[in-house]
Length: 169
Image 1: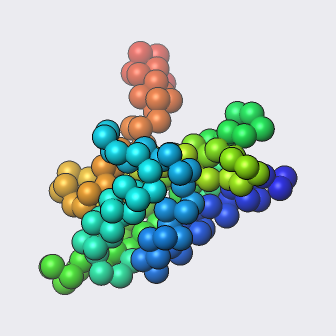
Image 2: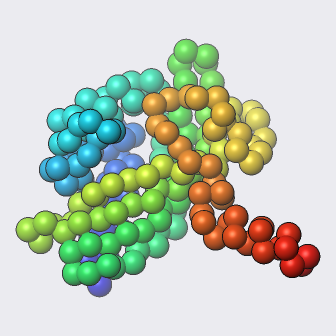
Image 3: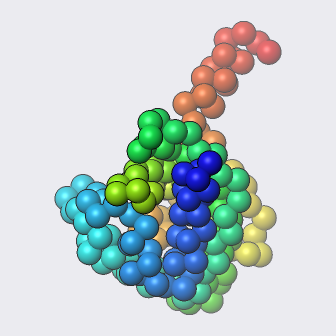
């Protein structure tokens, strides 16, 4: 239970660090050997990446919701975290709102839990005045975060619809 409580604090701390632009706090939530893109490793590389990425939005607000955690062993776990985010886009004077999930891998080192990896899956990202639709905003190429389309990112999603098509539910 203690490990679960500690892991569940990671996404909350991540949201506060992102929204306050506290890059030192943010990268401290990740393992020291975190992989950044295809070619870089380490917290300093991650700090540079987050600084570039988060400088594209002025203000932001990340609201963390559902959080499922499964333990692989005593020092490894994985989970899915739901998040509603709001991003001020100063270049066009808009506020964007979106829903996303982070698919996380966690690792315990020296008794402390860290993010090992966060994979970003977006349901939508739209201007505040726009009603969201499936995939809205994913095709615009906004921002440096590569997102994976929800709900198609789940292997079970396509399996379900293939089964429905084949069985004629």
